[in-house]
Image 1 (cartoon, helix red, strand yellow):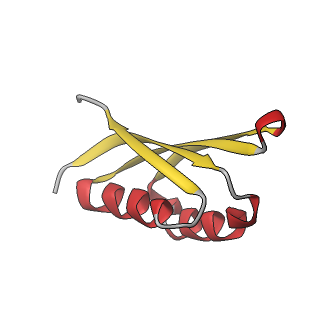
Image 2 (tube, helix red, strand yellow):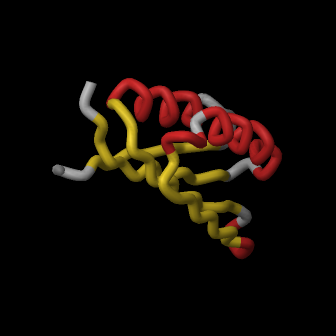
Image 3 (cartoon, one colour):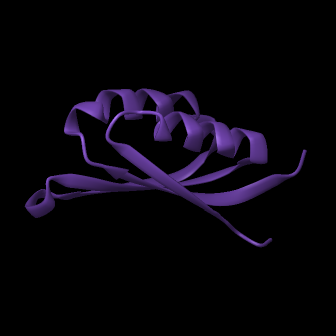
Length: 81
């Protein structure tokens, strides 16, 4: 299977979900190129960007598992190359 570069955007509106999010990301750490998290205290939420290099099914699994966490929303965009 062909690998693709993707950016998974994560909005965390439930601060108690942090441990579960980190556990999921840790499971897929071998695919991760980088990660950046920004807390937005005024709105009581956090935004996380995760860049991965993986097959489509792995990218979908990461995004899907994260999106099933209560108080978490995800969106994935793919590089064209």
